[in-house]
Image (cartoon, rainbow, N blue to C red):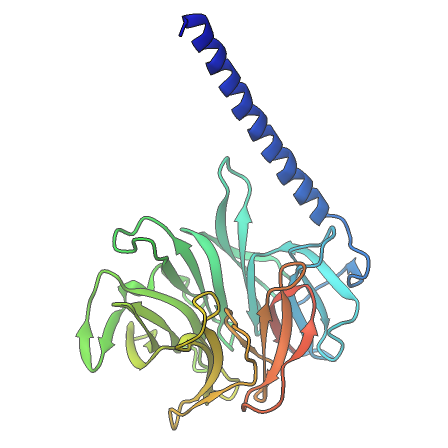
Length: 342
């Protein structure tokens, strides 16, 4: 093959790769622009005031709006007794969100740099930034304690040598009373089966707080198993309580945890079922939702829980009784990460 022919082939290959790259960028841009266009039949959304303040004349839901249009990904609100009604959008965008007692935690993309990064932003009752903290990976979970003094978040990270092809996480706790940030729950002392435990493969996620602003529950993964743990923020300890529990969420009365559980015999692509654990008797009750729910469930009150499932525009919310009775019911379309306030 002559030198001229080799150069021609090289130039052609470079041109082809460039064309493919341009086409990918155009398609991505077109897709992003499409999401900015309001879809017919979607919820009515207008810009207005969104507050996290406790109390008020009516209960409300603050959530991540997933409906296509100019307010997609923004925090929005609706009355809790009219979840399918018109939405008020805030202008504040979050990938993950939760709020309680006038405090919000918003995990968001930071588009200021060359490469997309993420940060955890603590919000006050008026959605103003109180503090911001860089994240080591992709946001996945966020929670605020009932009194609004503690926040937690979990991210997916890469680079842990033990992880192999499995995911690895980092879970952080921030005490707003003191400003103390525990960057990783992996620094807490672990008691497993009544003994001190250490392992390089430890991961935590799915924190939920008790009303005493000190106790929390979370998922611990190690040795190929997952465990429910109870944590003590003051003692900086976590203690295993039970196997095969993930993403717990504590009921408002502090007596039960709703969680997702891997059920043998189900598809590897849809292995989860929702259960409630009574903390006094340690008895599990399966909920009526038979679809696979990969979410950290939210309690609307002591009787009902809400969770997300994939929908046409990202996610929809459903509700089901927490005692195992009833049937799942649609709550909101095109919505994610709800917080019930007021």
